[in-house]
Length: 395
Image (cartoon, rainbow, N blue to C red; front, side, top):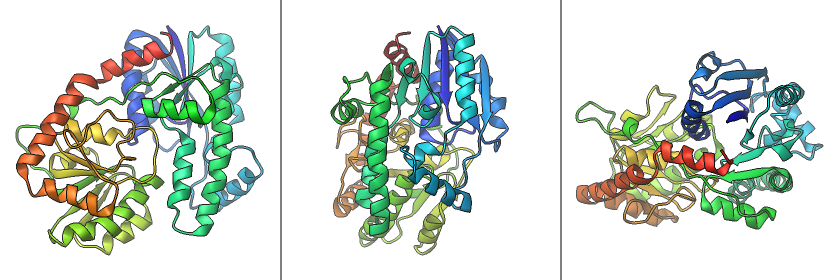
């Protein structure tokens, strides 16, 4: 099969969940099919184009530099997007050059399938009717949750407007696309209900069990609670603000020395300030390897109140042998069972109790960890996931 894969970035350095999901599937698809990879490139990382041969026979990139969200140029982009039907999260990735390159490639090559990876490249795909849209998230739900959790009326108003624009645009693309692939049955049902499309096939999140397997010995950074995730993503920032302000004080009322590690790239200034104001909270920033932090942690936490799709961090913690406490949104779409292979709670007091129950009981930690490891070993290898994706796109 000849496959054209369209995305907004290269897959290295690999430091976001969506990149990991795409990379692990494409590595396997590349071994069985001819994959051409087309993406935008901001030129920040030479590693991206240098390693594209690991998952494609040919990589084509288009220079594109969306402004930093802290820059005056972003304020100008916000103003321009306000006059567009596109939500700003999509508007940032419009590229006439990418549109021309897609047209050029599809005319020159007889592709058996074209995949638009995430919603964001879609404005550049004139013939979306010929594409399969790979929906890692239902973007509308993320923006609705941003509006619901916004800390002030101004942001609540802005997020609400963006949610409405996202609903209109995402629904239009889903209805026009040749096909849609979801990452969970929950997302599939949501798209059916929200956008009026037939329930799309779903391909679950996978994990490299061998890669995350805990070594027999080694010295690892020791922390009681570990959060793993990109810290420039708003749902993660909100989740850790919520945890530190509302949950951690309840835990420390009984375990005063409980330590927390926030492990992830590009921590926001808000996250840094928050951690500096609370003792024994470590913000690592970008690390070469997240696994030692998982192996050295007693409990993995996923206190998300905003989000969509599925969180790879939960299956990674399971493969690393670390029990997880999550909110329902944090574990949304994953095939997990509380309290057998995960602990789940949404209210601050209940979340704190689940953390304490695991921190105080090594046997409970071992029981949850063993059940979780069995789950991911038997059902969620990337080989199984990639075969399901092939079936979903008709390969």
